[in-house]
Image (cartoon, rainbow, N blue to C red):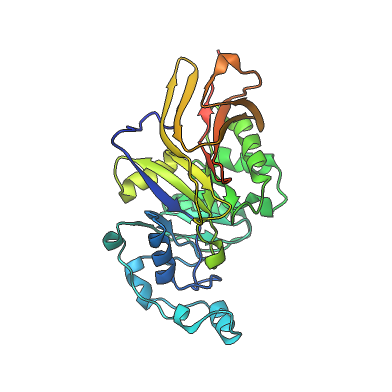
Length: 323
């Protein structure tokens, strides 16, 4: 069995909160970049990617030299955006204790999160986007696949073709597309054990009402850009969906993960229940699972941890190699 958290030192490594899909008035969001950063900082986020549509809102120390989108200016005239959100101020991620990730949402034809690079051109074919982002050493996450009508094989073909296409959003704007977990499971069944696809939960924030319901927790030796990238590449994270956001948040805490002799054990605090899922089906319930005692396990198993208030924390897949 392959454990995505095998290199984590649970006593020494930190857990860092991240949102990888965020909009500002540089595209079709309603909040200025600096205020978006401030709001996430106030909620305890450590890692943030501002992913405006085909606009690279980076670096944060240059916000003041950037300009709001034409769409935002039109919305100002219509009273849908306030004037202060079209005036920009710089922010220093180092001073805030945050990691700013360069990127944007490449928005045609399929929306994707393009990270750690400045490619920002819509194209007629997804291949063009993937080739260009690979040339710039970027990482790419498929955003909100439930918006589209593609089947699992359509995504499988791309994941097999492009190694830097490393993830899929399975929660977006709360739980706007609940079938995306089933799609992810179908992709995992086809690709594992050879090729993992990591899951992400992101706000896709355009306004304050969509802020703080979805996030990811990266477990890293230190909070640096290099380690954040490595964490994204290697799946050193959990995804979180909190239906009520940070209001009266009851959050399960994963304190450690142990894999030995075909048994996975989660040391968790604050949970109501834990479901183990393989191939889209619940195959076991409880804090630990022994593969030999569970039927219906395919090439992987993953856990979802539920809190009394409805918050869900999910693991990345543990790869099962059957003899």
